[in-house]
Image: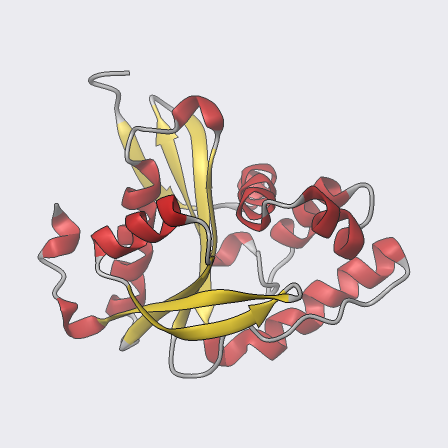
Length: 197
């Protein structure tokens, strides 16, 4: 796809299907998805993405297009709003599955949280993940946030390398879905000139 036209833009409610797929890719474990969101987990995630003021809402997402085709998405929000966003997210899951999830907090006040990023298989290797991450960080810093944080599987070296290449560094560990994840952050003063590359 040499010479392809790449566009990173704010998501709309019509992008809920891509956002749901990106969240599912980010979680990565189908058994975990089924445990928390039921057998129809993509449908549940799509409803969450279509709904305002949820963790995966289109309001908090950016999408990548390649030659007009949606190829990936990223979701992020102010960590201070996690409880507010989870309330609506968990209400949808409970309505759809009959059970309310219990998940450790993956973020907190003081960081803008990169929750999920995912690229469709046919579009991987084009740098879209990096472009989405940079765009999300730029957006967070423009809004006045001092740092962007994320968690990543400790054995996912490829993702860690990607995040490190943008400027994220490990700052600790966080429990998530019953195991420990690396907590990584990037500071505002890292310099947005790197993001333009």
